[in-house]
Length: 263
Length: 354
Image 1 (tube, each protein chain N blue to C red):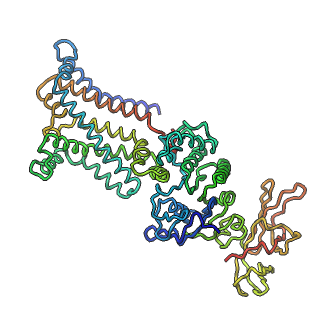
Image 2: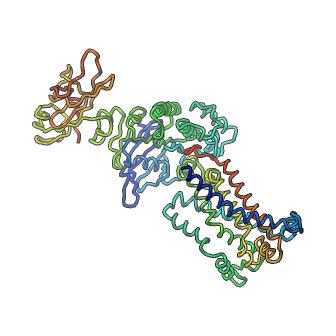
Image 3: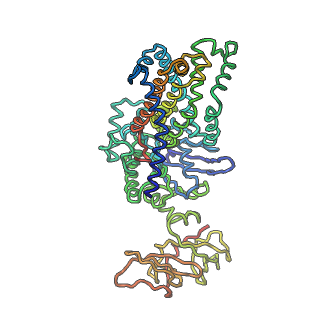
C-alpha cells in the first residue's frame, strides 16, 4: 500500500514537472527583455500595444456573441432531446463531436465557398457579415464542449418531472426553460461558456482565413516577428484560460442543490 | 343525482401496438376522494396522466365540471398534481415553490405572499418558508409539494403515489394529513397507489384496476367485503381460496374436501358438477366451532406463528391451507402443529369467485 502511494506521488511529480517546466521556462524567458535583469518590459510592451487591445477586445466580443449563440442553440436542443427525443441522443452526440474531427480549415473553406460575395447569402461581402460568420464558426467549434456541459447539467436534474410539475402549475415553455430548467443548469452552462471563451480567445485558423482582426492572428503575428513578447503573450493567454477555469470552480459552489440528491 | 364533477368516459390509451388502458369509465362526485388501486403496469398512472394532460387518450373523453378537457394542454386545465419524486424546483425556496403557480397565474405579489403563508399554515410548516428543498426531509418536501399543488386553488387534485418514497411511519401520518386537508378544502381528488392499506384507509371510493381496466369501483367496505372479481378478491386483503364442487345447484350445496357447505343464493348460474373457487377472509374464520357460525370444516394444524397479541394459524384442508388469526390468551396454549382441528365460519361470509 505504502509503495503504491510512493509511485503515485512519483507519477504525479513527473506529470507536474512535464507541465510546469516549459511554462516556467517560458515565463522566465518572457522576463529577459531587458539585458542582465529580469523585468516585466515584455508585458508592458504587449499590454501597451494598441493592436493587442483592439484584437483582444474584438475576440472578447466575438466570444460573448458565440456564448449567446451557443446557449440559444444548445440549451433548448439538449433539453428537448432529454425530454422528448432520448432515442436520438447518440446521433446528436455524434454530430456535436464532428467539429473535433473535421479541421477548422475545412469548415472555413466551406464557409468561404458557401457565403462568398457572389453567393445568395453573401456573409463575406461586409465586415459585419464576416464577423457574424466567424461567430457562427466559433459556435460550431465550441459545440462539443457546450453540448456536453449542458447535457451533464441536465443529467443532474429530473427534467421530465420538473417540466411536468411546472406545466401543471400553468407554466408555458418559455417560463419552464427560463425559470425552471436554465437556473438549474446554470453552472453547467457557465462551464460551457468559459470553455467557449477559452477556445475563441486563442483561435487562429478561422479568424485568419476570414481576415478578422482577432487575438489569434495577432498572437501568431507577434510570434513570428518578436522574441520576448510572444512568451509574455503565451503567459497572458494561460492566465486568461486559468482564470476562466477558476471561475467555473468558484461558481459551481453556488449551484442549486438538487432536492433528490442532497449534498 | 347531480352531474359528476369528473367524468372519464370510454378512455383508451395505446402506445404503438400495446394497449395500456382499455375502455376506462369513472364518474367522480365533487369533493370526493377516489383512489386508483392496482399492481404495477395496470394503467392507473396512465389514466391519471391523461386526466393531467401529459398523455392524450387514443379514444374516449375526459370532462371536468361539464367541460371537455380531453385535448387541453396541462397548463390550461387548472389541475393540481403531486408527484412521487416530489418535483420541487431545487433552485427555489419553499415559499417560491408554493408561489410558482400563483405567479404564473398572474396573482399580485401581496396576494401571493398571503396565500403562501396560508398554505404553510395548512401543512403546518410556517417556519420553513426560506429553506431550500435539499434542506428538508422527504415528508416535509412532499407536504410542500402538496401546498404548491393546492395553492392556485385547482379544480381537481391528482396524487401520483405521493407516499411511495417515504418511510412507513411518515407515510401513515402524511396520508392522514392529506385526507384531512382534502376534506377541509373539499377538493375533488384522485389518488394513485399500489398500497391497499393506503387506499382502504383514506378513500371515499376505490377503483381497483387490472390490465388497463377498472375491475371494480366501490367504497372500501364494498371492495373488501364484496369483491366483484377473483382479481379484486386476491389483490385486496388476504384471502383463503378453496376449491369446491357443486353437488346440488338448486339447494346451493357445495362439496369442499368431501365436506358439505351450503351456499344457497350464491351460486348464480352454476350447475351441479361445476367446480368453484370459494374465498374466505381470515377474520371470518374461527378455530373450533363457534356460536353463530353455521358451517364448519375439518382439517389439520399445518403452521402456527406466534406474533405477540395475535397467533396466526394455518390449517390444512385437503390440498389447501386456510389462514386465520386468533387473539393470544395467556391461559390458553397455542394450537400444536399436526393436531386435528375444526374451523368454522358463517356461510354468508364465503365468497364465490367468478
